[in-house]
Amino acid sequence: MRIVYYEEDDILFIEISKGAILRDESVSWNVNIGYTADGIGEMTILDAQKSGIYPLQIERVVSEAA
Image (cartoon, rainbow, N blue to C red):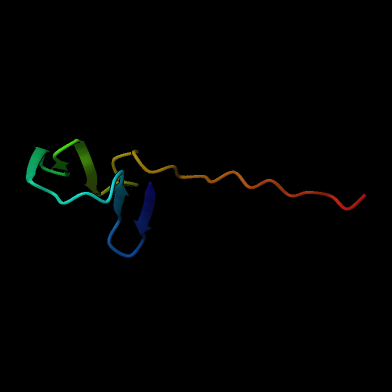
C-alpha cells in the first residue's frame, strides 16, 4: 500500500495494490476508484484537505533521550 498527498494540488492518491487497473469509476466529482481483477487497486481524491478527507493535523511522536 502506498499513500501520497500532493499538497500543491490538494490530491490524495491511495494505491492499494499494484495490479493493472481494468476499470475506473467516478464515485462523485472528486473521488475516483480504479479496479483491478482482484478488487479496488487505487483511489484518487481531489480537494482532499478542503473536503476534510485528508487530516489537517498530523500527529508526530517525539521520543525523548533517556
